[in-house]
Amino acid sequence: MNLSGLVILYTGDGKGKTTAAFGLAMRAAGHGKRICIVQFMKRCEECGEVKAIKKFDAVTLRQFGTGAFVVKGKHQKEDLEEAAKGMVFAQEALTSGLFDLVILDEICVAIDFGLIDVNDVVELLRKRNPKIDVVLTGRNAPEVLINIADLVTEMKSVKHPYDDGTKAREGIEY
Image (cartoon, rainbow, N blue to C red):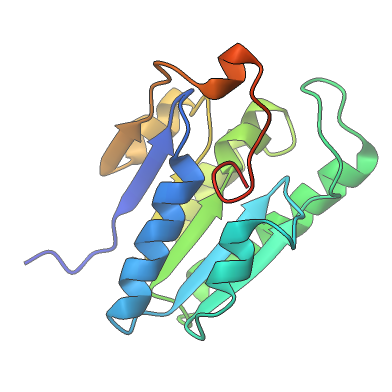
């Protein structure tokens, strides 16, 4: 029986990475686990998943983003500051012993956009409490994180309503 925490990675260009991570958080909460969700590049109190997950006493959710859309290669100083704060909070969550599951939502995008250095994430994973399960999400996961992860799922976009001009829908995309 393996008592070490797993590193789980949800990546790819398809929909469902954050949804899968939040689903796992609900499952863990159902088993009495303590969960911390750290969202990078996000600040959305009205998103359905945020409103729902806040109903679980076992879940701590913190968002580190300005609320503005970040364009790759054109981030602002505030985006870097929020990402740095997120990394500090993530380190506390991963070492404090307060949580059984820590989700680092959109951390791969923050790396891809140059807000976080992948080597800092690798170091964060190495220094974590080894009993903690960790979920990393986001498109364009770096190869080093794919290699470190125990479980990797790639969401692949085959067809999406956006392709036909459909706008984001409440309860489906947010």
